[in-house]
Length: 431
Image 1 (spheres, rainbow, N blue to C red):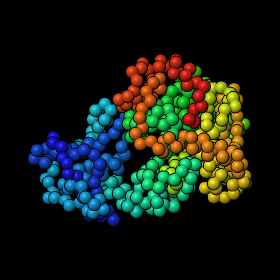
Image 2 (image 1 turned 180 degrees about the horizontal axis):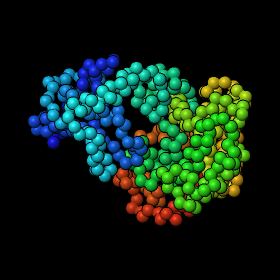
Image 3 (image 1 turned 45 degrees about the vertical axis):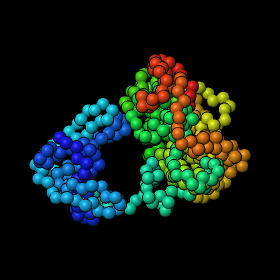
């Protein structure tokens, strides 16, 4: 099989679809009778299998696409060449982390066409007709972002000076935390490279607790009750890989949630894990936020963030320790969701095995708002002004999930699981 640089493009499909092609690496036999389209993935990046629609469209374009170079102006049509006589088509998925190849389709062009008729054709037309806007991680690559109504304009949201000539960037609070740990770690994560042991045991407990509460709150019909909370160590989703001790710690944390559950009979406009995108037009940054819960209480907006930890909080700066709270305070303090600022609040729910704490921040309080902006500025300014993302190798390399891709990573042995648990036990978790 020989690599094929030209794209395989089907032109003038129907139902409004003018051109159809598939991303991947293309290969063909010397006589062109056999084609193989290899779809690339990396471990942990694609958490779901390829859908039947994806496979159908990939097989169809592989079978009937005509060779064409990528147009210099991407808005122009491809200049396709003569059709090749293809008798066999293979669509495979190749994992770039281990080189494993999985065949998704192997058949004739006629079989590829039949598969496309059953699922691919209608799905492609539906994409063309789609008008819904869903802001998120792809906004920074979208040419319509500057005119999109779903992206809220928020000049000065990060408290930074104006960067008029700077290229538009995108960031979340998690990104800033990765940067604070090591600029290179942030950069390698942003490249979506495969991660190894991304979550320590305490973080996995937090994720499991978060997932359980998300499922309960999605009902939005009544507050969480004690009978809704797990009592058996087999409660967590297997993907979080919790042993009995960790699962029981999660049980004790969840047992305290009903006393501080935000879902009440008068709760309205409840959204769970909704992605919000704000454009800080001064800093030239798209700020991505995904609050655990957002709802209205007596018409005013409330942000609820839930965290888990194994020890009681001891008077630390809430905005520095929990920068999500700082961002939520800035968003509500600016009235970026609409509605009154007075009455709005940020709630931080901290679940411990021995109890629950509910801390509140008033975005209408000038002092608290100023403290929130100060925390955001301290985190965001070094990141915004950095264009090299140099590594800071050391002990943090032991637990860095992308250190295998970092040429500057310190040569340190991984922490044993018992040390990893002890080291992370006192840290706030991303639940």
